[in-house]
Length: 265
Length: 294
Image (tube, rainbow over all chains, first blue to last red; front, side, top):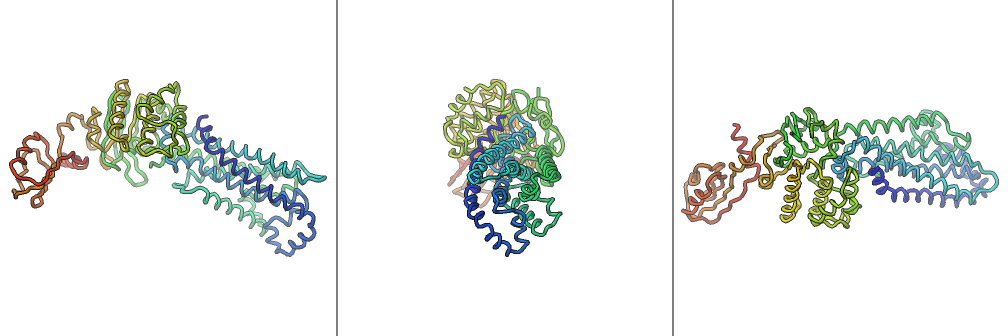
C-alpha cells in the first residue's frame, strides 16, 4: 500500500494534465461541429473529391460528420491517440523510473518482494487510467450535451468513451513489457510517441488498403469508432484479442522483472 | 552465530567478471571490513546479498536464510547504505524518511528526528536541493532508523566531511554496541582499520585474503618519498623492512614497515631537500599480497 500511495503521489499531477489535454481537445474541436453539420452537403462534396484511400484512412467514408455521434467519433480517434501516448508513457516509466532516477537500491533493499513492487506500480497506472477515464467520460458528456438536439444514442456514446481505457490498457501493458526488456531507457516520451504512432499508422494503412490482416495487430482497429457507431457494439473477437494481449504482456512483465538483475549505478 | 555466510559466490555479467568464488562469513556482533579498489567486486557482492542481482553460482545466507529465496523477510532486519545515494528528487527529506520507515513494522518515529539531529540533517529541505554529503546523511538515517540487526555500508564516508565522518563512526560503534552486526565496505584502509575486527580483501573479483585487523596493523607500511640534497648510492635506503624501492638519481620512493626511528636515523644523517611520508595506496599493499603468494 505504501508503494502504491507513493506512486500515486508522484504521478497524479501528470495524470490530471493529460486528462486536461484530452478534455480540452474535445472542447475545442466540438466548436467545429455546428458549422460542419450546417454545411454538411458542401463539405461532403469537397471531401468526396479526396482520393478514396485518404478518406478511408481518415475514417470519413464510414462516419457521418453531420451527425453529432459521427462527428464525435471522428475526433475521438485523436482522443485515443493522445490517451494512448499518456498510457504508454506511464507504462514505460513506472518500472524504469527507479532505474533512471537510480533509486532502485533504495526501494528493492526494503523488505518487499519484487512481485509486490510490480503489483503496486501496475496498480498505480491502472488507478490513474481509471480516474482519468471517469473524468473524461463525465466531462465529454457535458460537452456533448451542449450540442445535443433531438436524438442521441447514449449507449453508443458510452461505448465509444469506454474504448479509450481499453486501448490505453493495451499501450500501458506494452509499456510495462518494453520497460523490462529494454536495457537502458533514456527518455520515455519519444519512445512512447513513436510506438503509438506506429500502431496508429498501421490502423490508417489497414483502413486505407482495406487490409483485413492489418486490422488484427493494432488496438486502434479493435476499437474503430465507425464500426462501434455503425454496429452499436464492440466486436467480441477484438475485445478478447485485446484482453489476451494485455494479460500476456503484463504476465511477461512479472516473469522478467522477477528474474532480472537490477542495474547498479 | 554467523550473520552472513557467503559460500563460493560467483557473478558474471554475460562474460564480464563480477565476482569469482567469493566466500567469507561474518559473525554476530562483528564489524567486518570489506576492502578493495574500485571495481573489485565489493558492490557486486553486497548487491547479491540484497538480491538486487542474482548469483551465477554459489549462495549466500543471512541470519541462516537464503538471500534470494527469503530476501524480503531477511531485509526487514537489514539497513543498507548504497555507495551512491539517490532519492526521489521531488520529495522532502522528512517525507522520504517516513516513506522509508513505512516499510518496517514497529517503527519509533522519534528515531528519525534523533538520527537527523546527530547527523545535522535538515528534514524540511527537498532532496534535489541537497549536496552530495547531505544526501549521504539521508542515506545513513534511512539505513539506521529501523534499528536493523545487520547494517551494510557501501563506501559510507565518501562525501562526508571529517567531523561528520567521526559522528558517523560514533553512531556505527553505538549500534554495534547495541548488538548490530556491520559489514563495512571501503577502499580506504585506514577507516577500516579504525573500526573493524576483521577484513576481507577483494581484488579483481576474488578474495585475496581474510585478515585479522591486528595482523594488518603489524603489516603497517608507510610510503616514503625523499629528494636528497647529496648523492647517495641507490642502495642507501635498502634496509630491512623496505620494499618497492625506486631510485631515480637523487629521488627515492619506497614502502617501509618496521621501527620508524631506524628510518629517521638514516634520513637524518644526510642532507635532504624534501620528505613525504604517507599511507600507501591500497593497491600498493595489494602488491604485497601478490608477492607473498608468488
